[in-house]
Length: 243
Image (cartoon, rainbow, N blue to C red; front, side, top):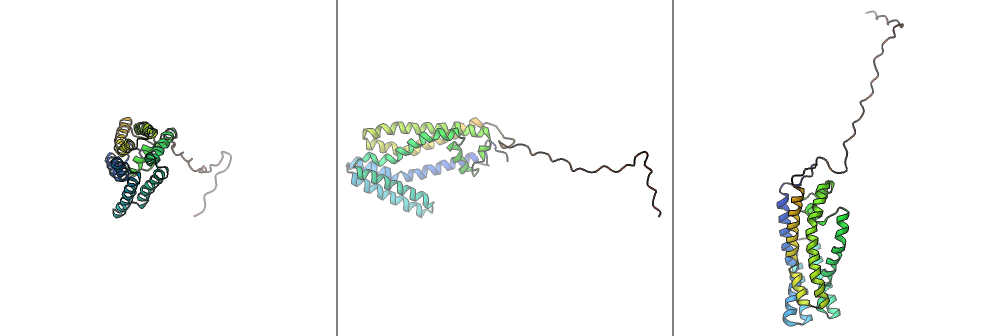
């Protein structure tokens, strides 16, 4: 195997296509958030906003089923919307609708440095899934470090989102918080594309001659062959056999 800078033919195109697909998918997923934010901004009635958000979540679920997309992802979106609705409905605070997303960003802000230190940059995992390479890129030290550098761009975007969302949440600004949450997919998509560019520039024209952590196969010793018997000088030569 030769883990090159571009692991598969059209790898760069595969990453761009994957980012565009993920962006479109996430835009659909934020429909409940957009509906909740817009309705609450116009009516300031939490019950109406929650009803519209849950209806939008059910609509996203049905749309994914019609498009024959993975049911697991559709269920995940619907489950998150239900959790958001329960939190906001029980507390009577519209800002709690965005609490799951805020917790997710906080967890990623803490976990990402650990993953980078362990040699598992999430950008590398995403690119491996997009190109079909899986985790083979980890065998190359240069590519592993390049993915870590590229993911720092995504990490910076995550910290930026968290630094904006947390003060809004503490201030109880539900509409502003929802507006920021709606633009989150665009920020992440731009961060992913910039991170991919940083990775490509860091790798350059590097090609790995052998996977990291492997050593050349040891050469096996030649099989031992007994030397032909030669009579000693004092030993008479055997008499030739008669025909």
